[in-house]
Length: 218
Image 1 (cartoon, helix red, strand yellow):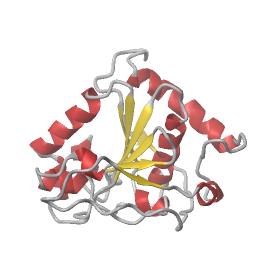
Image 2 (image 1 turned 90 degrees about the vertical axis):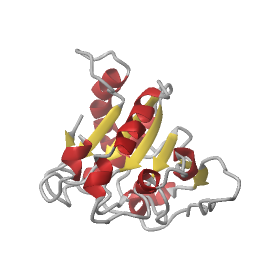
Image 3 (image 1 turned 135 degrees about the horizontal axis):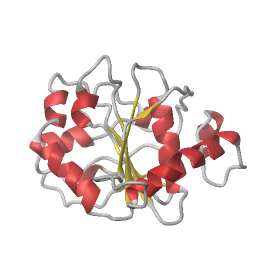
Image 4 (image 1 turned 180 degrees about the horizontal axis):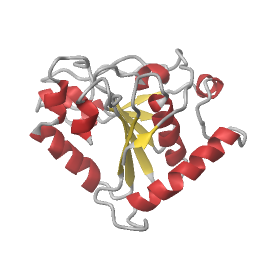
């Protein structure tokens, strides 16, 4: 469900850093854990758990209610894979990453749902930077290396129900459109949609007009 975004926000630069991903041949580990700097996020206008009630938090409560209905099959009409939500906008700089992060954290504050925030802006990834984290392996690495499992690159956070999937080290490569249109991506989307019935997945996608990746992802 593409959501057009027209908000803008700042970017906190400080916070935790992700642990290294195990190299091939080393024992596989569970998802890494990162610490988000809640004070820095709140100062940048990001919704955070346990913060005083605010206008921005209430706005995202309004936005997420129909999306949760679609995700759980309780909307006005059935939506196939309604738990996959894509956030995009026409041009860069219109606040889609700000919207994606706020929406994901607001959804993660629900009692009954877990949330995976995917940085699918593989052209100019910015989710980790906005959250004060260092670049690490992620989506593109899964698509280009069958030995990498999704659990190897997912990042658990100190927001208990929020997990991150970074864009990956190969971000900005020339064939990103083809990777998002590949059978491996289709398989990954099916896994995300079907494996966990209580999980909502938010994709921070590239802007529509300057690139083709969002149209392929949609």
